[in-house]
Amino acid sequence: MQSVHVQASKLYDNQATKWSREKPSLLSDFTGRPVVYDLIREHVEGATILDVGCGEGFVSRKMTEMGAEKVVGIDVSPGMIDCAKAHPNKGMNEFFLVGDASGLKQNLIEQSSACNMMLGANFDVGAFDLSVAVFLFNYMSISSMNSTFEDVHSLLKPGGHFVFSVTHPFMVSHNTPTFGFNCDNVGSYFALRDKCLEGHIGTIDGNKLNVRLHFKTIEDYINAATSNGFEVVSFTEARVRAEDMANNLPFFADVSGYPLHIVMKVRKPASTADAVSLGSINTLNILPKKLNWPGTVTNNVENALIMWLPPAANDEIIAASLQVYDKGISVDDLDIGNDITAQYARRRARRQSMFSATKTFANDVRNRLLHETGAVIIKGLDMTALGGVDQLDKMTACSKIAYFLICEHIGTVDATARGKLFDVKSANIDATSKKADNVLFSVSDSEAGWHTDGASKDRVYDVVSLLCISPAAEGGKFRISNACKSFRHPM
Image (cartoon, rainbow, N blue to C red; front, side, top):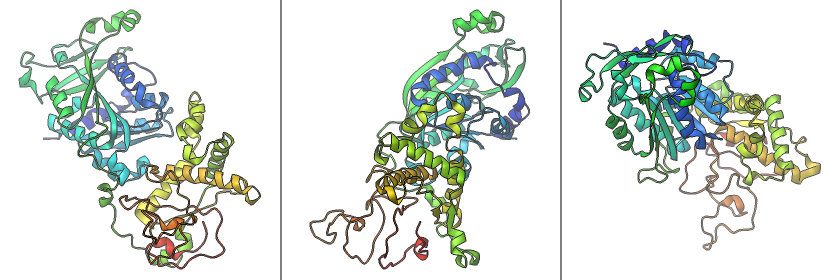
């Protein structure tokens, strides 16, 4: 017998092109999805969103239009994902993956490079501000649904929301041209649990698409949420809206007055007893413990480690850095979403393409760090365009902004320990003094037999980076503990 997910994949592969659409056309586009949009509206702007069971990307594109910073969609149907990737309105910040939602987190881990994500401590704390699952659970068993809830809870940041829609269990007794299921045992509510029912949903142009429902009770959905650590925020029974009924009575008439869908909004508590801290790493354990350099690397370190910033990426970073500097915003106060991209919110194509070359380059850097050399030296940023040595203060401020922008595209900068960036320069502090408490040797001229660049003793990071603005005439003596020590060229 084929698994539930294989069956769902084939069902949608066979209809993928029929699901692809530019504007609302399905019954649920006028009933369930508008409720989803209303419930997520306050959380979308600037958010990183996970669309579970994304299909051909209709909802993902809508969330980008609503102001999402990044959307990662995953669906079991390769045909639907092909449609999502090929859609002419697909945004630069939309990433679509083929994967089974019952193994959601593992699929994201295995395809992290394909969706522009960095694994490690921040991933374990929570990588997404918001998640949606629009009619996904119709195609999953109760046990598989619970697995998905568990993974979504893990993937959300503390305080993040999960909004999902499902067919209302009442509708198994309904079967009309617009919407319905083939159910011979209508009266047995609890006996139908986990039974698979075939059905259809109509479109406003008269077509029908095949759908499926693995029946669940209302209690099943609530238990799946609460037993996996979510708090229930709202519960809505979606129906045909009066304005839609007035606009197209023949299409909506046979479902008028029915509770067509359930839309629930749940929240991961902002503070939980079992929350993962930034000092605890789980997903990094799947990465290689050691990256062995072949002879081609050790014999030609310069080619292996140096990555030149492409001209197009350099132009993007320079333009954004100068824009921020001209506004009088320092790197510590910088909010990329508000200070750089917000002004393009109404010009969607410009906003999405603003860092397109930088994103591509950052993805290559991340792959090199995690899977190839484990270390990179990025060169090619035009410091003269940022002010040069003749305007040293401006160049220093702008280069820090540029550096932060590059780092934020490679991964997620943790600004909670010592700010977005930490200046490695003498503060005339004696780090060896007994009075010095948690003082980094980076701010001291004191000698030490060892030194780390960690932000604090209780923090563990996936990547540590260093910006060299003005190379020193002479450096200290190194007892190297990582790959970068073997290469002395200034960044």
